[in-house]
Amino acid sequence: MFSNLIQHTLTLLSKFIAVIFYTPVFVFPGILVAALGGVLGQFYIQAQLPIKRLQSNAKAPVLGQYVIMFHFGNKSSDMSLCPVFGAAITARLTSIRAYGIQESFKSNSLKFIDFYSRPSRAYYNLNRWIDIRVNVLANMFTAGLGAYLIYLSHQTASNIGFSLNMAVGFSTGILWWIQIANMFETQANSLECINHYIDIKQEPKATDDGCPPAYWPSSSELCVEKLSSQRFYAISPSALHLEKELALLAILGLESVFYDGIRTASLNLEKLQTNITIIPQVPELLSGSIRKNLGPFNQYDDAILNDGLCSAGLQSVQSEEEDDRIMLDTAIASGGSNLSVATSAIGWYLTSLFFDQYLTMLFYTDYKTDFVIQSSLRNEFKGDVTLITVAHRLQMIMDADKIMVLDAGNILIIALPDLQSMPS
Image (cartoon, rainbow, N blue to C red):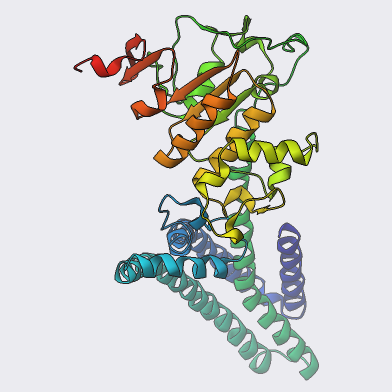
């Protein structure tokens, strides 16, 4: 775009020089027309930038209406990652029809379209505004030059035609120059986004001092001393807040957490993450097959993977139809969008079984998924394994050795699992 701006600027200068070469008296009118065009262009650019920003912001809900409006808790209905936008719309028609919300969908669509039409109309009116004024300047300059050449000068017909041709190209080219300059400035604003990404805080680089011994972890011992946590860096830490995965990840990086005798803050983040299994509330799998998700480096035989699928209870959360059975070669869409939340959660849970990790964090899930995972935990998690469960139902934690009750970020109770006997 910058090269186009330079090229068009040089073209305007060459045509203006050609005009004043045959009619030097029009040097001042030409400069005046160029100056007025620049002033009008500056007004246009300053008014157009905020309008275009509003137009872009209003356009997103119109498109998002078909992609992210309906998320009914079923991962299989989430087509936000569908590469074909038309396919995403088609996939939503069944949900819209089933819930009987055609009128609601229509009214919301019209509301978003109306909201988008307001800045769009102002944007096109602004283009007409600059177009009319620049064309008036161009016509006045060309008409004045033509009258001078015909009635007051003694130029030949070829020179008059050449001068008028250059004058028309110069005067009308001002509008194109304004539009190119506007596009150049608009694209230059993308540097703000680049600076935003540059300023994003990055994970610390791995160091030799952050590498734990080869035997680590040899136990599931987790020691927490004077713990404080925060969900975001911009707010003050609370006493303890375990509602989201982000909070748990922040807790593991604090100075007061020791995992198998080593302070977690001193470990390389990659090493710490590979030795902890976190089953989030809304898990996402990688695109590929089930086999690639469970063993991305082909480190497990198919027999081991199939045993893991059976022991984890994956078949319990699927329908009885043969076509719906999850096998090792089952294709997984990006983010696991073609699987239910229950199936994705069990897929994450399988990693803790295969990797033999000592520390697993389980976030609250739906009732059916929780029942399947808890049943597998009682049979598969044996020995020195620490399981931290973030739950909203007592059933998920009845087998726990100790229960921590939180309220507004504060620790209320740390006791054995006999909470049902407590009146509160």
